[in-house]
Amino acid sequence: MAFSLPITVRFQHCDPAGIVFYPRYFEMFNLVIEEWFEQIIGVGFNQLHFVEYLGVPMARIDTEFRAMSRLEDIVIFALSVNSLGNRSINCTILATCDGETRCKADFTLVCVDLKSSKAKQWPAAIRAKLKTCYEEDQ
Image (cartoon, rainbow, N blue to C red; front, side):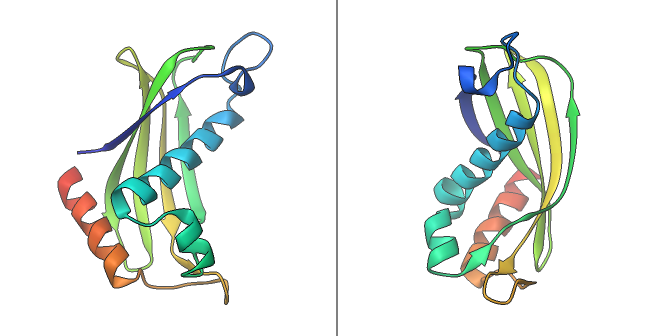
């Protein structure tokens, strides 16, 4: 049961030909992750960063671009959890439009203590939500 977020391709995402400029996908991936944390995990990035002093930086990303997205396409970004560790999580975001895969990203996020800049274990409440997502996505 992946988390889905529709994003309308805007002029800001496109090159002069009206096609999504590939680095903009990485910004969209980040938006999907941020919305997933807020809506599903139950902790927004403001709370995560400035109250709990935790970050979730990208440690690895493997992206495959399969088809072009154009201005005003509505692309559905679906995030699913592949594996959950004590300090990291591996996920996939599949971006589709009208049933066609536009791109796919497999990535790893790491839980980091922002004061020490070191990886740390997920807090219990966050890990419980991540585990629920993992179990639903299997």
